[in-house]
Image (cartoon, rainbow, N blue to C red; front, side):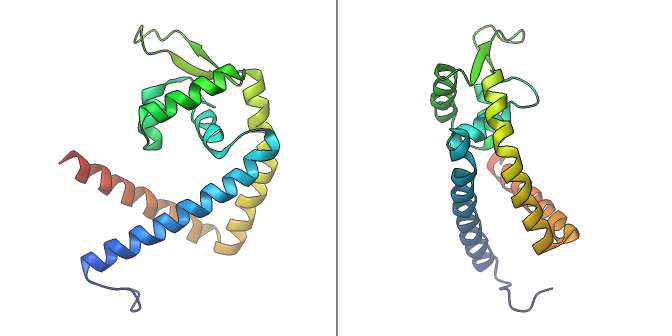
Length: 152
């Protein structure tokens, strides 16, 4: 494989964690910059983005994002107060309402899309499509492994 990388599992874990923490910081920074012109924060965009395709309960959003239900609940309530999202009845669970985008929320997401697309294109040009796909695959594999370990 890559001879400049450690082989010791403890060193691999530490290096991976540090790289992921740095990457997370980079994603948060660029997300704030992309979201700001649309009147959003990165966290608001993240929650709105989770319900672009379909309304979801707060607990479902939290699970998908890997954060606490309470954090998502606070953001969801703010989004509803600002008419960017709304709560709808949940046929599967009377007390767990579904969070859905409003027209204003969908418009805010739409205002981010051109800058998001430009960043995606820059990354694709820098990495190349195949490497970009390998990165995504590796991150998904790592996430699945961490999920499996957390279950044990």
